[in-house]
Each structure stands twice: as C-alpha cells, then as structure tokens.
Image 1 (cartoon, rainbow, N blue to C red):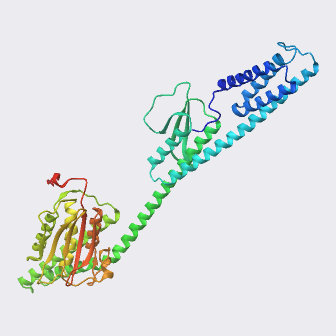
Image 2 (cartoon, rainbow, N blue to C red):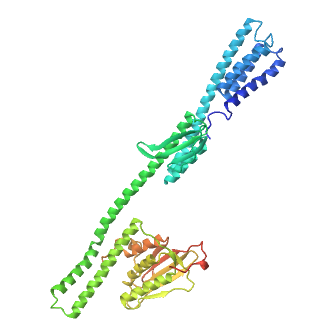
Image 3 (tube, one colour):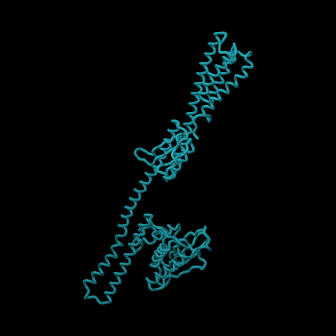
Length: 470
C-alpha cells in the first residue's frame, strides 16, 4: 500500500521524539561535569537530525525545543533553573536553538522530498503494471475488476464500487467518500465510488484519478476494437454478398431458365405435345425446382456459417444412424442401392447436432455419388480410436489432384462442370463447428476418400451415456 509517512501516528511520533530527548538527557546529566557546552549542543543537534530523518517535521520541532529546555535546565549552571550565570552561555543556547530548528526543518524537508520521490516511483510502477494488465484484457468486466483490485490494494480504503451497483450501507460521519467519472474526453464509461477511512491526501487523490483514467483508456480501446470489428464484419458481409451474386448468378439462372422454358412449352405447345412429353417436361420442372431449392438452401446455410450464427443442439448420437439416413435418402433419389455401410458394433456415440451432421454427411455423399461409377458403390465406413470417431466416405471415381484437395472445400469453388460448389464448404463449416476435422485422401486404386473426425468427450464414461435423443 502506498504510504504518505512512516507507520506511526502523529501523537506516537511526538511521544517517541520526547522519549528520545529524555533518554539522551539522562546519561548527559550524569556526566555533565566532564563535558563542555559544545559537546552538549553537538549531541542534541545529532539527536534532532536523527529525529527529523526518522519521524518528520513536527517531532523535530518538539525535539529542538525540548532539548533546549533540558540543555538549560539540567546541564548549565545554575542547575534546575532557566537562569544562566554567564550571559555568553545564553547566546550559545539561543544559537543552538536556531541551529537545531533549522537543521531539523532542512532534514525533514529532505525526508519529505525523498518520501515523495519514493511514493511517485511506486505510483508509476503500479500505474505501469495496471496499464500493462489492461492492455491484455478485452472484457469490460475484467477492466472494472482490475481497477477495483488495484485501488483496494494500494490505498487505505474501506469500499470501492463501480456504479451503478446494488446500494451498500451509507458511510458514517468518520468516513470520506469520493466519486470519480471513468471518462475519456466526452466519453463516460461509468462512475467509481471509493470510501476512505480517513480523508485522503492530495497524492492519494491524484493516484486514484490516474487509475480511473487508465481504466477509461482501456475501455476506450475495447470500444474502438469493437467498432473496427463491426466495420470489418459489415465490409466482409458486403464482400460476401458481392462474391455470392457473381459466383452463383449462372447456377441460379440455369434452373430458372429451364423451368421457364419447360413451362412455356407446355403452355404454348399444349395441343401439339403428347402425354409422355408433357410428363417429361413436368418432371424436368420438378427436378430443376428441387435443384433450385437445394442451391438457395446452401446459400442460406453458407451465409449463416460466414456470419457465425450457426446454433448447435448437441445430443448423444450414433453416427451409424446418420449414415443410414443418408443411404435411405440416396435410395429414394436414385431408386437403387448406391451406398454400402460398414460400421462396427462397438462404435461409440458422439455428441453432435443430428440434423446438421446429417446435412454435412449428405452433402459429401451427394458430391461423391456424381462421380461414382455405375457398377460400384460409395462406402461409408465408421471407425474410432481413443480421441476421435471417424466417418469415412469412399469414392471409386476420378482421383482429386493434390492441389485441389483443399480448394474443393472452399466456398464458391468452381468444379470441372463449371458449377459453384457450396456443399463441401458447408460440410466443412458444420464439422469444424463441432470441433472436428475433415480432409480428403486418395482411394487405393483410384478415387477420393473424405474423412470426418469428430472428438470423443473424455470426461464422460461411455457406459453412462443417455441414449435418449428426444
């Protein structure tokens, strides 16, 4: 704690100075016949000097006047009276008194200067440490907490509160309460209420104000950083919107054009078209509408991922069930078994959002099915180790070049057919939102193998897992 003076109270320091003068006078009284007036004066001057260094101004004045009295009353003839035999001795006494007072005052002044310098150095060190600590913080609550801790640790206070806060008991008449704005220029971030047991000194007031200013600067830095982040988010959203429009303009126009053309043909050539041709055009419209629906859904999902607005509803899930649903959907779409499932019986459960993981695995599976040869099947395999559960989607089509293995999972990647790929980017975002990993390997004999690795929570025993997903 920053101290203004020595640890003694004013009355205690005065009593110590009085006691030291008496303590020195007693042995001098015993040997007064062996020493001269010069000896007495030098000894008392030394004592006054020591008291001024140790205890300060007032004790040195007390020591000066008390030693003058003891010098005259006990050590100069006639003893035990303030009268003197030789008028020259009276001059010596007054010269001693003046010298003792001046010596004490100069010494006390030097002591105060040294204390002020030490206190300022301590304050600078505390403020430097406080500023360094604030620079590492990015939370307003932590800034306020650091301010309270610093003020409480370095000032003799009873209470330190950031307003507004729950009302505490009012200070009594013997306490001093200060209110300071935590502000910078015209920006106000709060109010600081500090209750002192005794009225604070000017130095303590300045230190408290400096701490409040440091906190205001740290809060202003956080506010500026948040403004920069908001600006960057707006710019990123605008850039994403522009990129999105450029990237998917072709993909959006294609199904719309096909739908419009088919509908126009049905309307204008109604009498010329056979029933089979009408059914074929109707089927084309339905397929392209589904394609358009998937594309718009992917765009919405991608925007949610980019904005960080993806909410997870995690529960214990068997990844084999997710793979089974993906295989069932693929069968409904293709009316043939295109997927082979390979899962061990002891595959542990994982915590995940069932719907999102179904979408992630479904996007990957739909992607690889486009390149799977007609005479083979995509394999979805499950495996695990102590840290992760793996979902492996094995394709036997063309091998992906090494330089494209990362690119195909980036948003708006243009595939060989010229279309914009969003499905794999969405799958990557969903898996990473689950703190998992996704990557591409080469399939032995040709093809691409996609691997999803989901972490296993180690703090929960697998035997105690709640199997109810409802």
